[in-house]
Amino acid sequence: MSGIRFLALAVAVTFASIHSGCVGEQPTQVTISGGASPIFTLLGNGDLATFTVYLVPPDSEHMAQPISTTPPVWRIVAKPDFLHGRPISQMRHLMYGVVPKGYQQTSDPQAIIPGTTYYFNCETTNAPSAWGFFRVENGKAMPTEAKLPCLDMRNGKWITVPCSQ
Image (cartoon, rainbow, N blue to C red; front, top):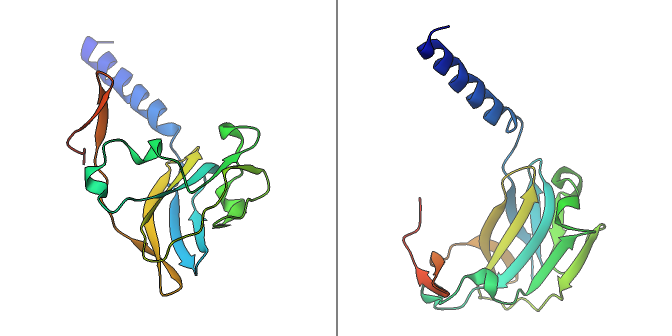
């Protein structure tokens, strides 16, 4: 086999083996509904590892550290660990403050403050995770938009860096 044919075959085999692990993987999607206690509807074929909610500060674009370093207002984690979550297809809905079977609460739920923006991070295994923002207005939970800075740790300090697209 010539060198060019061998190289082409090696590239094709590598590409196929890398992408065969992704077949059937559906990115996680989260929609928000409900009232003063938001309901998160989960779609996808991953397994829920953790679900965390953070309060977004009013001046969020100028945060000096990532939001994940701040105390969450609510967090659940799969038992016994991150790798043993239930399939999202079996869960379908999470209600803020209610711990589903097979999970433990690592941060007690704080009251949702109407008009305040919150960030959620829905970490999954076996599929891409999802994140987003929500708020409660007039007794109704709804998605919203917010900006968080992109930060990187350099020489022991967080610095703002350009966000990758």
